[in-house]
Image 1: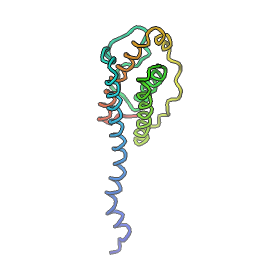
Image 2: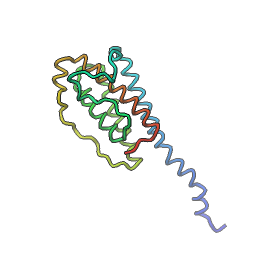
Image 3: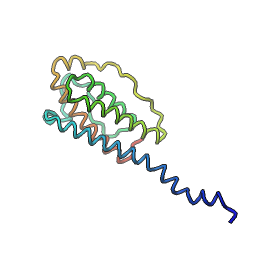
Image 4: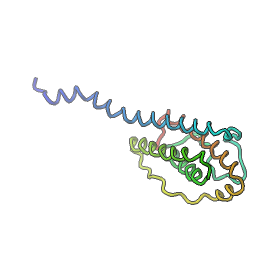
Length: 167
């Protein structure tokens, strides 16, 4: 037996490889679980069931719609916009959802770094054109549309995570 250290290392290699893959799968599972939690929180807000996420509402064009194919960076950008809108809403219903979006963005960044995706953290966004006017004109409708579209976007993201989205 002249192989000594090399043989022991080769014997351990499959275990080391498996140990590296487990955290990435855990992050992806945590991401999916958090998305499901946010969708459940939105469902628990009773007035969000009254509007379709595909419905167009005049003056609310700044709210992201549904995107069939989402990359990790596009998911982060979309969540950043929703987070900015939610923090502008005075309703207490959306505070926890906004915090959850921040955590979800952090998980997406972990997934991106594990895939060697070099996208930077979305910094402060420009003030969304029309947000203040929409909030002033109809706070309730804005909240309903935002939460409805967010829910649709999250469900799209959940499906995309099953296919290991690109950068």
